[in-house]
Amino acid sequence: MSRETAGLIIGVVAALILLTMFLAWRRRLRRDSDLTAPLGVPEHAEVTDRHEILYVATTKHDQPLERLAVSPLTYRARGELVLTDRGVALSLDGAPTVFLASTRLADADRATVAIDRVVERDGLIRLVWRIADGVHVDSFIRLASGGPADILPQLVRLCTAAENGENS
Image (tube, rainbow, N blue to C red; front, side, top):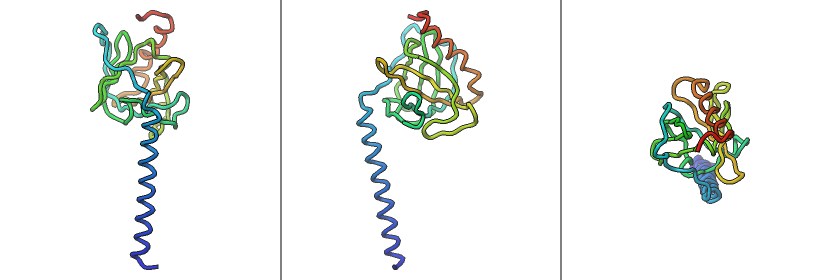
């Protein structure tokens, strides 16, 4: 076999792999097209803290390797996590602000693995929230500076407040 033939075969195989990846991603976008995160921060929400973050992914609940294409949380991005008295705002670069009201938040804890990111032990924060009635998802974030311990107590307090009916 000549070098040209081998190069052509490798090129065709690479093109087929890329085409398969493209079609699989398009299928995932269609599958998840009805999943959207709530947008816009309530008018009278009082900001209590801000942190620079790297948003990693949103996955099926307790399935950190099964990515969901939740609009506008489809792609990994840098941004800011804003804690308010009413919930959590994710202001990601190039996307509208997502607001997870405390009534939607179910849990907040630490994680090590999400679909395309493995970090040091417990280096990610996992936010468990309700996207629809009876449907929970996990969103993973990483703080740009500091560790999860800096913010986790505040997140857990928001989840607990919702369980106890303290937030409106």
